[in-house]
Length: 509
Image: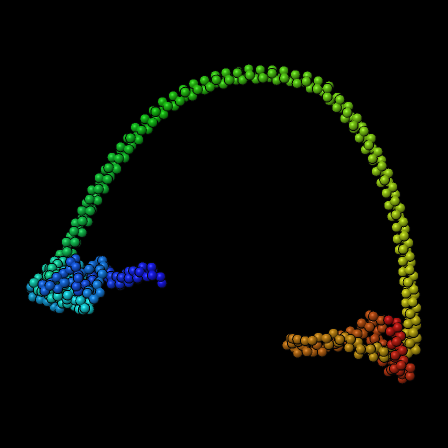
């Protein structure tokens, strides 16, 4: 560090050390406490000196610098404390034992002398010690004052009792640096019913006086109410009479005033209407004169305007009409030529479209006729081939019937019945799940099993409706022939012969 900065740094460091020391040793005092400074160099302000020459400094509501080594500071609280004061049974001046309870609020005095006295006696002790000593003093004086008074004085004038206790105890507490902020007697009681008996006559007298006063008050109230009602009714009658007279006078005055007013108004209205009619007549006459002059002026103006328009028409309209007529004639000629050209073009277009449509219709007709002719030829060929096939099939069928007779046909139909039954039962086989509901007669499952049988029973009628073959009649006729004579050999066809009949029937189908 340069030499020229060394001295200022030392000075600043010293000042900083002094400031820190001052800040550390300066003590401030709150409003609810006092600081007791002891030691040397105390000065003369707020300093107390006792008989032996010892000094202490009392600081309140401010602060002081405490010199290290030479001085020492301690704080004492100035907060108030509540004391519950009570006494055992104390005999009064009359010899009646009573008990008293009170509440006292005490604190260290605010003067320098009180703070010094309290510091001398209670500095270093707990707060309970201060409260205990003050409570003993108060209870002792409470018992002493209670013994010098009668029960009636204590009962009837508790404030006086409390003031005497506070006045006597305050002197002793002042010697301890304490002061009584307030002292109140909470309760005075006895265990023998003296206070209760003392209060009964007074209570009875108070009740009696209250009942008497209440009865008298009710009586006076009723009397006053009746008198007030009477006076009120009288006043109402007088008021109604006065109001009626006043209303009558008012109505008479109003009627008279209105009469005069109506007459004056009628005269004024009549005069006003007359004057208004005269004024209107003069106004109408003046307006008629003005209108006459205006009409004459308008006629002159219209005459001059007609003359001017005739001259203007002769000068402009005729020339313009001639020019317009020439322009119209030229425009009509041009329009006529244009329409003739458009008509020629339209005629040519219509003729061309008609020729094209006729040619197209002719070609379409030829194509349709050719297609119809080819279709008719094909349909005729199909019909011819179908007829040949049906004729050949019927011929074979006739040969089969002629060769084998009804026995072969019956044999074929009988062999086809199982296949027909299978075809009829085919839809039932495709059912995945079937729920049968029994009606209670055991017909549920039987109805399902008899479905195919009942359906097959209709097969002869169905065969008769389709092919004309009466299966029942054929069976009856065949059985009758068998019963009458032995059957010939041709009546029982072989399997090959039956197959031929079947093929013939299929060809017929």
